Length: 527
Image (cartoon, one colour):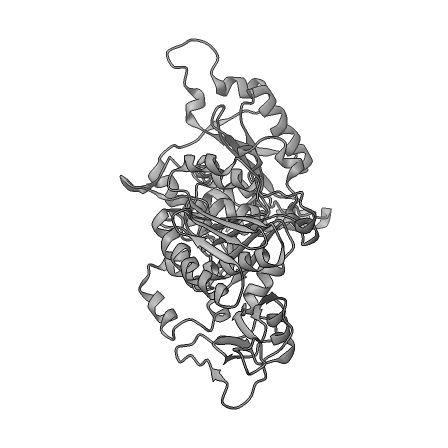
């Protein structure tokens, strides 16, 4: 019979080991202890006994049978340490992957098998973006793996037409795809104990989040095992990449895109990320890392290093959160300016900038608003200004469209701002030159620090700098189909030619010193 949580550990002995060696720089090693891997019975195990014990307890093993005269357990599945970490994570929402080659699909499918064997009546949904992907990465393999379980005496059947694997204890795995975003509707009819989105970054982000609401269970045996789970396995890149990073990694979702209830409902500790690297997977061919070298730079960073901050066609490749995002506190004794991009139906944004004495500019905070009247916007801008301890603002560089009257003789929006104690300065609206100025401020100074520093709380600007792409019809411009409102306010700000804070030095002279200075000046005049 097949059993989960086996404890018999394979012995490392001469003749049973195949050591994994790599000649091109990828050193595969156990993420727990740093040791290498050995191959025993077709599976890779850590060289250290304690790590092998953890692997065995998370594996699937077949008990000795009459046909198995060795008396040894036969392991059908031995998770790598990355797989053990993923499956043992008890949070409801879990993202795994990062770099390519971390055995994500295999890890997800066999993780579901373990739960189905261990928890009677367990119901799971396994999804890929398209049917061809589902067939290649899961259906064909499930069709092969069902007879493997049957050969060891376990009641498992698989119907490729129905895309279902059924277990003798009442558990079931249903496989599906999301070719059409509206396909989500057919998966919302009932709750499931596990929903798995394989290569989730390729999904429609809002449809995928809607799916997560159906990962719920009231079954006592499921609750005893930790409750229902929503798993996403993915490399960076794709329509949902930014959302995955916000929810699972940075824990800073853009609440303005969702219902007001999310601010109270979102619990960061329920959303976890288990990153994987090439070093985690000794099953990879020796040429795997070298094969990735042919990719474009941005794609190489995604697949080799699991970098969630780079995307295809990224407009600001100079931007790096590790470099530009810093907490410099709230500077005192410096001068400030603001930058404003107006929006009512579309979001608007106001940035608060400190002009540092060394020539850098520092975005200390930002205010995102939508469906808000000008008086209320002004009131919040003034409140934030006061909370930062700013006593004087040089100017507020603003969207030039605020001065337009559109053929009318009434009050312009710029005048309304002024009446509400936020006078505006018309900003230069040259997009191409403006974006170039943004690039120049993102550039590094001779000492390696950037000219522009952004406080970590300015998530709106950070998110948009990371996700902005080039206009397909004009590569010199930002694609206006992406969210660009904090980018626009930043462009207005840098085009205002902000200058460093300069300090005035006051000197005090005694009466005798003033007399000596007067006599010296008089002599120099005579000469």
